[in-house]
Image 1 (tube, rainbow, N blue to C red):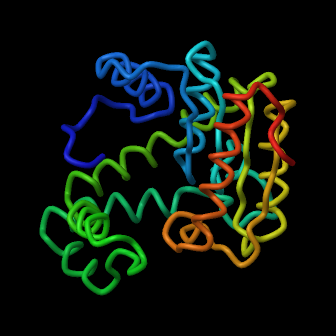
Image 2 (cartoon, rainbow, N blue to C red):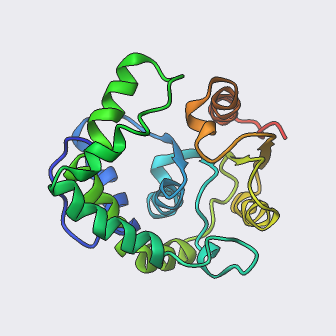
Length: 226
C-alpha cells in the first residue's frame, strides 16, 4: 500500500502479518502493541495477534471483516467474486489512467484534514494501490482460512466497533468477533456506516474512544469498559 514497492504474493494474512512483524522490528518500534484493523484489515490484525501473541497487548476491530462472512447466508457479502473481478479490471484501467479520471467524481471525504485528503486523492487511484487491492482480494480464500484457524486472543483487551447501518446478519458476525477474547466490549455506533467510522468526525470519535479504552485497559491492567 501507499508508496511501498510491491510485495511478494500471495498477499494473504500470513504474508502481510509477517511483513508487519518485520517492519516493526526493523523500525525499532518497541512493543507490545495495540493493533487496530478496519474492514479487511481486521482479519490481518486478528492473524497478527494470534501469530505473535507476546508482541500484542490489545486489539480494536472497526467494522472488521470476519472469516465466515463470505459463507454467512444473511449477509450480503456472500461472495467475493464480484469484487475480485471488479478490481482485476480496475487494475488494468488504472494503468491506462481511467481510474484516476473516475476517481475525480468521488474524491476523499471532505471532513478529513487537507493533508490526509491529498494523500488519499494521490494514492487511491494509483496503479500500485489498485493492483494491491486486487492481489489481496485474490488471496481472500487463503486469508479467511488462516484467520479462521487462529481464533483466540485469550484475555487480551478487545474492542469491537460496528456501524449501526449494517444489516442484522453483519451484527451477528460482529458479536462473534467479540467472543475472541474473554475481556471484550462491542459497541454499535448508531447511524454510522462502514466508512464513516473512519472519516466522519462524530463517528470517528466513537472509534477513537474505543481504541483509547483498549489502551487504558492495557496500561492499567483492568477489564475494558463494556
